[in-house]
Amino acid sequence: MSVIDPAVSVRLSASDARRLSALLAEAAHLLEDPGPHRMTDGQADALGGSASRTELAGWARTLAAELRAQR
Image: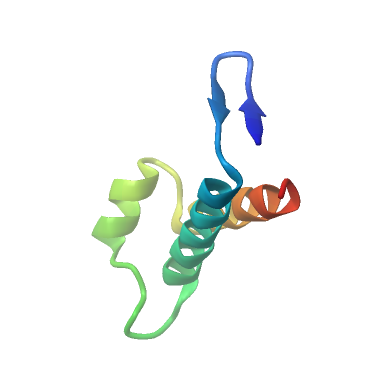
């Protein structure tokens, strides 16, 4: 699979795309989880910089879905 942006081009094998998709989906879950497994605010800030928790979770879910669709 190729991910192409005017500034960046990245190639992932199918297995790497599946792995990254799973990782992103899990990160989104941990950002959204209301329970004890919820990612801390510090962890969310470290991952997302200036992005809100909701924005970061949405981005991770969207990218995970795009990777799954490219298999």
